[in-house]
Image (cartoon, rainbow, N blue to C red; front, side, top):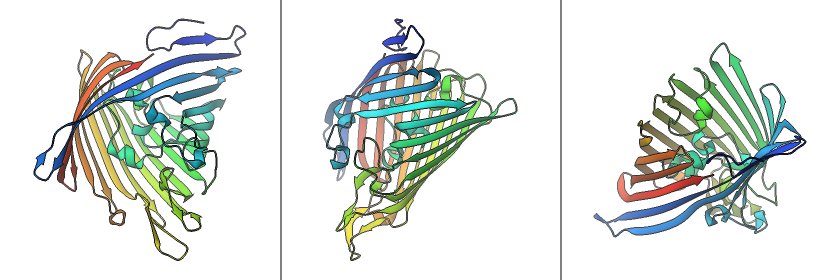
Length: 377
């Protein structure tokens, strides 16, 4: 057992006979939000909100052999525990990750359990490693999140620097902690990544902000295809269940993502585009009448850029927009966010603030000012 330095875990332990290891870590995120909603011709009085956004425990290491790794992450905040329903046995939504990862051959891994699907890069980036207070509106409405199932991951090297990564997932299709499944069909996910200039330092393609100050230009280009057969939720594996007079309405839902990540000498860029389609986006009863549930189909764009100064202060700008299909009846939001972050010990101890101006159908909607901190042992 070792007592690690700050940010390296609370406890690092390896068994005396070297049959397993574990690292225990904890983190908290606290937020303070101020919102000015636009009403008629002016912004109204501010609304304030204090919240523990995330409080989590994580256990990871290996068992039997370093080739068999595991990860367990538990959510403790009310935001993590919410979303219960009969399909989760009406129990707190506590488990985030419970997955084993087996390196069964060189550059090959098999994952089994509950964890994030290989979806858009912004979602796969840990919430501890964001350069803004939270993720974009693209992610909140279109990401494919976590699910239960299997994943196969492979890495290929082409010459001295060019690297590709291939990720395939077969999952249940209804999100995390489901105990009564499978209600619809299965979900299939494929992600292809190309890194033409080699690996990012310390997996920086999945860490926002260029904390490693890449001295050579690094780039990741990626595409994700997700197909959820006979999906029963309004946002593929997320959203609300769609009920009709015979039970659950089912339809095939397809989601595409295109991602770009680039870093160079303190500069960072993340851009992602997505599109969701459904075979039958409007849920109906057996007689053809509408139930009122609609699959959230449409397109979205998010792009953000930041620069990290030598004193570890970062200034970042983000633009996000969603264009729903007309059948959804939803308005189209846009957001411009200016963020400021002070990294004391990288992402393990940081203080952040951002201000967002939001519009709906190009009309003023609200102004949001957020501040918060991350403390990650």
